[in-house]
Length: 572
Image (cartoon, rainbow, N blue to C red; front, side, top):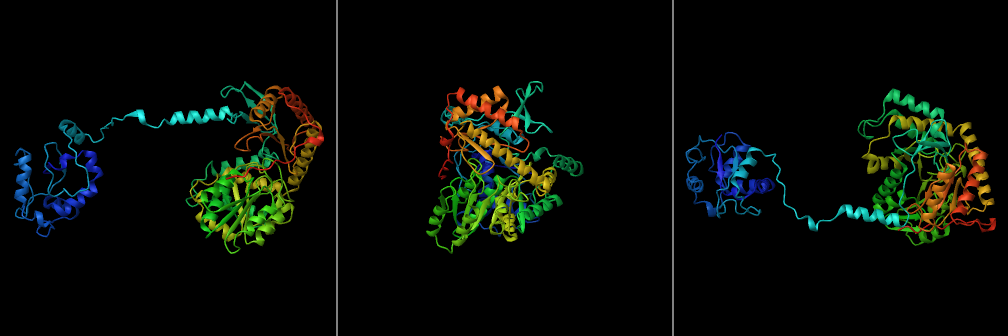
């Protein structure tokens, strides 16, 4: 196929031609008779008549022979016998098959392409240019001055060092759960050496009832992977909705006495997605948020960029004070938790709901640390207090008392369908696998049975025994009505030291809690008793805590000096 070496395009690098291709094509097709013929030939077959080309008046005096002469002059007439330029007279000539970049141009701009909005720069290395044409995959390494670039790794190092200096840097304990051993586990010192391990007693697990190792749940997982394999196969919309997904959503709705439920990959995602999606969509929406709310709720609220109003932790009067300042007719969401994860407090749920409804708000209520643990069937504080019918949106988890992983919301069918249709955190993620779904279904079945009620009673008995003995020992227990037992330390380094001493000397694992989970100055140990902790384990824990507490220089307190609940930070 004949080739035309265009001396005007030769002033550009190959990268410039590629980047400016739309501009070159558009301008050339309108202004240059030769280029216009080429473009027309690309898009239409059998076009021989160029009389209708729209050539600008300033160029109308130039015919194809003139253009050919200009080209041949720059090419030194080297290819004049080889190049056939289509003209209005020569109707049988072939059109251009390609435009080849050459380096023979000096300082003349193409009269037809001069309006193209690109910067012209000669690329004078003809040999290198020819190599590019022969092998386009050749990589051209740019010359870069690295002295003024941002130093990413230095930034990361400085931020990590800052956390180490303020003792908030976290070192994960390597804990291997063993089936049938709960609440004990193995601490592995060496990742690759199974012999270098020891048995420890875990006092900080969120597997509150030990269902993660329940025989029914283990069997459900084995059966599910045998029947269905390991993965879900896609998002809920694209091959990732199975009968197990729909059965679990029905069971969760039934548990919370709601019309509908919706599954998420975690309750963090459920809270973030639901609050963001609702607040962003509701016209002129305002959010009223408890100061102690979980990071997942705070994230969803922040991302929505709607006006937010923070009320003091579980303070109903402050909530009402803020609600009075807002018009009743605008949408409002009141978001809070029933059981607080770090201080163990329980809100006055019915009073909170009633105040919110009185001022035209809907409620978003996080029951993450309550589901499975409270109420006749384990539906949470709402069931315990007989107010499920008043709760607008409930969020819960499958990853704590239900012994699995995942999160959900429950409410009326229109609301859940709205989140299903608009919530990015639901739409654009792979759905939960069959093993998790089967495990969660089995956990709810256990929770709603007499066995579940027996487990809850035993857990509460152990919580009361442990709390009483810790207080009697003079340890600064933060008093709370729930199953969570926080012990105030108030210093990140000391809290970590306590944790390490308990593990190293007594094979007892309690995780120290520091910033950003809690505010600086409120660092603590957080203890969670289960139905499977025996009295002798409780006595060993209390005795060990007394010894390490005093060994690091902390003092024990009288019963009258015990800590009251610490006020939550005012989140931004």
